[in-house]
Length: 265
Image 1: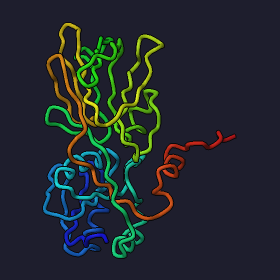
Image 2: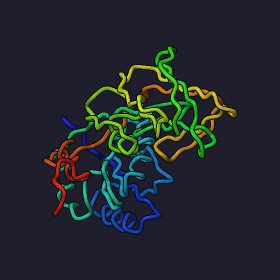
Image 3: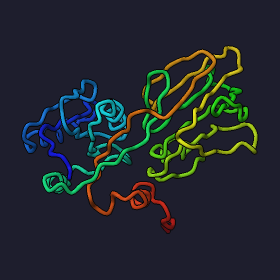
């Protein structure tokens, strides 16, 4: 049986006017709720209702994964692949929460250098204007060297994001794996690979300078010397999923990405 959400945090993005407006509406609907900016979130809640696009949702998911707090997203952005509902579905969402018509999914996350990612970790040389030579190690054994613009280490959740644009496969979030995708590889025999989520992935740079630019969900960037190790994060992002048809992974593929639909005449 699902727990009762005694205190709900309503998180909005101040850069999006619609986000603040919808947040104020929800504040009046939910009893014992708190209004928060995505840049100033609090863990003193039982459920995080995030209003914005995928960027807002990703930022909130990384923060609340540390506290095992589930998150539910309203989309007021462009694509909103990770979000569950639209602004005109407020009443439906409230009813499903009250009737406990939902489930909570644990989504794999990545970690490296005290940072986390729900979608992906992107590694490039500090000189982004040229290709880099990047060595890939799996469990301390060298697998191959890439001459490429960079590498994407993606979760199944991130397989429909940057990974997809770089030619990676679409993977159901229920699959326990990570994806390794080269960005614009210089040779045709370099292809994306899928590895177990229990593998330790290391990337080394042999360029001069040997520094690496590492990006987490495209939102947090760090510079590291020569090498970075990426592993499964100890915590999961907990996504609250409303029990309705469109919440199924393959239905969302068709709705958001127009998957399997014939071109319009």
